[in-house]
Every structure is written in structure tokens, then in C-alpha cells.
Amino acid sequence: MASITLSNIVKRYGDGFPAVNDVSIDIADGEFMILVGPSGCGKSTLLRMIVGLEDITSGDMKIGDRRVNDLAPRDRNLAMVFQNYALYPHLTVYENIAFPLRLAKKPDDEVDRLVRDAAGTLELTEHLDRKPGNLSGGQRQRVAMGRAIVRQADAFLFDEPLSNLDAKLRGQMRTEIARLQKRLGITTVYVTHDQTEAMTLGTRVAVLKKGLLQQLATPRELYENPGNLFVAGFIGSPPMNFLPAEVSGNRVKLPFGEVEIPAEKAKAAEGKGLLIAGIRPENFEDASLAAGKGESNGSSTFRAPVDVVEWLGNETYAYIPFEAPPEVEAQLRQLEQDLDGEAMRTQLVISLDGASRITEGSEAEIWMDASKLHLFDPSTGENLTVDKEHAGTIPQKAVAAAPA
Ligand SMILES: Nc1ncnc2c1ncn2[C@@H]1O[C@H](COP(=O)(O)OP(=O)(O)O)[C@@H](O)[C@H]1O
Ligand SMILES: [Mg+2]
Image 1 (cartoon, rainbow, N blue to C red):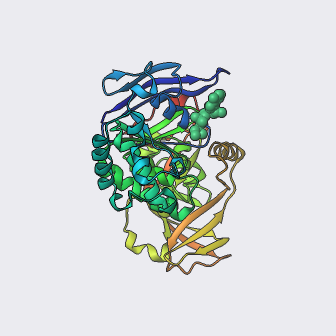
Image 2: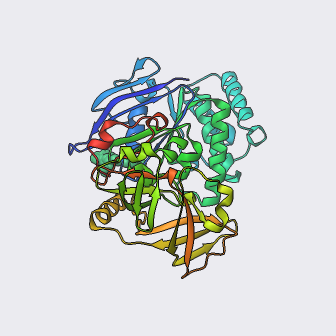
Image 3: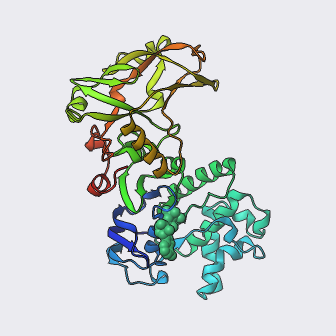
């Protein structure tokens, strides 16, 4: 096992376009690191540079203490774990797992020991004589991992391994991979465009946009303290709401009325003019049911017209349309494009208790926890109110060079 350290990694393809632009990520020994971002942001390119399938234009790639920029893939001792269809259908589970050892011409007794060890860890012992076609999706994934385990690789690399599966199987496999990674304790780098996979699997998550690292942090840090509009909009489902906002003193003017925010947040946004406020759906409640939420320092209520209500039993989504000035509209449209078409309509989506009796077409009294409000600079996308102590790493370039 080993740590993997990326320092100022740049990749320019033939056309000179930086597909990966000065990315630094430190992956600890045994860590489960996620690379996430919309299609085309450079995730696969990064992974292929780690494993050695793609040249590195500049920067240093280290595995443990060894600089590997110029090492061939086979000398890096990493294992790409391919999707289940990369198994050989005519070979047994045993021979599928043994495959890399046969290639390396290992003696039979060593092959047998390693295959049986791996099969034991992966709970595949009773399936060793079966063919992959007779296995469940989860078992097939384990066979693919078995093949990586017998190689005694220093790290596992996955590139969107679950993207071709249906939602239910994807959920099961996600749990399976998480369990195995914990049990094996092997350094893992996992590429996905799916924010749910990123949130549930990763010890830490590197969020990328157009080749630039946006933020490197734990799932909780990303969720609670996104460094910019892009990360805020990408992480979380349903996504964070974005509203036009003006700050004066400790008060913030939103389309529905004014709320009071903590003084240190207000101070960070002082004198910046028109801003974009971000607040998550669950930071609202039906005011008549909000008593249990306590009087936090951000408790505010407002009245607003609700145009659609979706009751899901355990919770209720309510939709409240609003108007935004052109500057904010333009920024939100750009964000929508950057996020690969996640619809950012100018409507507030709020999540209420399933017991709420709020009805469509009525004006409702809504409670909000304004202490959870973020304020973003509309020109750079920077989160002016981020709690830097709990936000992991936010590279300077993510703010300066890439307005969200
Ligand atoms: N072989 C290549 N030649 C030229 N450009 C490439 C090549 N591979 C990828 N790219 C470009 O690099 C960028 C990042 O691609 P990729 O790493 O595949 O993104 P992701 O895996 O995040 O979807 C994209 O703009 C893509 O078009
Ligand atoms: Mg890719």
C-alpha cells in the first residue's frame, strides 16, 4: 500500500488545451479519494496519469516517496479495477482471479494460495468453480477486485465503475465497494460524476471543473462549507437554492423578505452590493411545525406563495417561484451550464415535514434557519461566508480563474 501525491499536475493534449490544470491532491495511505465533476472536467485524464496510461505534461506524480512520472504502468504497481464486463466469461471465477498471476508465470502453488486468500476475503470461496455469467452483479464486481488483490497492488483505481448499472444495483454495489475498501484498507482513487457516490464513498472528495480543482475536502465539509457557487450547486440533492440578496448591517434582503444572519457572515459580505444567497432545502420548515427546531440565532419566518407541493410521505417539497435581477439570472444560467444542465430555475425548493398541511396555490408561513445561509460573490462565484477552518482546501485558482 502507498500514498499517492499529485503536485501541480498539468495535462495538455495535442490541441494545447489544459484538460488538467495545475492540480495538487495528496492521497493518504489507505484513503478512499473521490474525483468528481461533470463530464469533461478531466477526471479520467487524472486517473490515467496516476496509473501511467497518459503522459504528464508537467508537475510531479509520486507513489509513496517515489516519483513515477517516467515509469511504465507495470512498474507503478497500481490496479485499475474494471467494470464487471471485463471478466472472461469462459473462465471460472478461480481462473479470472488468477489471470494476472498466470500472465506473470507464477508457480501453481503460489497462484493457489493467493487466489484462495483473496476469495476468502471477498467471500467468493464457494463460487470459485462457477463462471461469471452465473454470478450476481455484486459477486462479479468482487471477482474484478479479486484480480486486483492477487496482484498485491499498492492502490485500486476505479473509473465510473457503476455508471452502466440500474439505480438499485448501483446502490448495492456502492455499499459493497465501501465495505470492501474499509476491510482491505487499500488506497483507492475512484472517479465518478455522481455526487451521491462521491458523498457516500469518499473519505475525501476532490471536486473538479474544467481541469481545475475547486475544493478538496470531506463530504461533510463540502456540503456545509462549499468554497464557491459551483461546489455549492454540485453537491447535494435537491440542490442548494440560489437567490438574489442584499446585505445591510446584519440583515439580508431576499425576494421574500428580510432575515438576520450571524454578524461574522454579514461582515464578510459588507459593501459588496448585489450577492447570491445560497440555502439548502432542509433549512426551511412549515412555520407551524418549526417549534422543535429551536430558536437558533438564524430563526426567521416569512410569508410566500407556494405554487407546487409534492408530498412524499416522510417529507414534503414545496416550490416557491421568485424573480431575479438580470445579473443574478445570468450567473445562474452559467452555473446551470457548468453543472451539465441541472435545472436552476428561479424557484425556491424547500423540504418540509411530511406532516405539513401547506397547500398548492396558498400563501404559507415558512420558517428558515438563516444561520445556514451562504453568500456568494456573483462575479467570481466565491463563497464570502465560508468557514475556512471547516472547508478543507480551496485552491486560489478555483476562485480567481474560474468564475462559476
Ligand atoms: N486523447 C485526447 N485528446 C484530446 N483531448 C482529450 C483526449 N482525452 C480527453 N480529452 C479532453 O480532455 C478533457 C477531459 O477529458 P476526460 O479526462 O475524459 O474528462 P472526464 O473523465 O472528466 O469526463 C475533455 O475536454 C476531453 O475532450
Ligand atoms: Mg471519464
